[in-house]
Amino acid sequence: MTDVARAPQRIRETPPQPFKGVYDSPALAHAFGVTPALLRMWVAGIRVAPEGFPDPEGMLNGGNIWSAESVAPVIEARRQLIERGEIAPEEIAGA
Image (cartoon, rainbow, N blue to C red; front, side, top):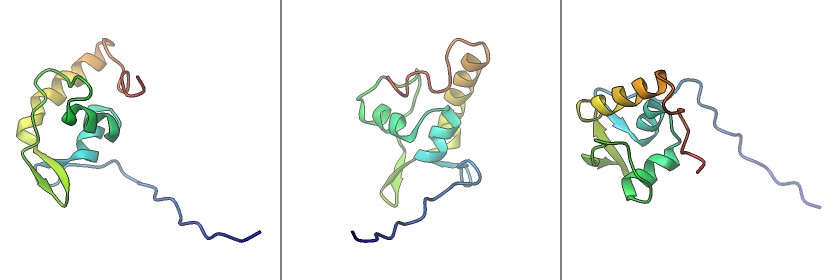
């Protein structure tokens, strides 16, 4: 039996945040209360995105980016739905 070294798990101490008005996929997924995988499905058109969800505005280091200005109305609308109990944060993430 061989002993296999395992890389330590990366643990994010703080949630991902937008950087100077730009959201990457992890930060935007956190803002929406969904997994990054579900966000990627929205972008790819595999799953239905929330109404008004904008297309990415560009790419940075191989990942999509959005301006905070373009996603702010959609994030706020989703937060209001969550607060009213109309949807759960990750309601469709596992579906």
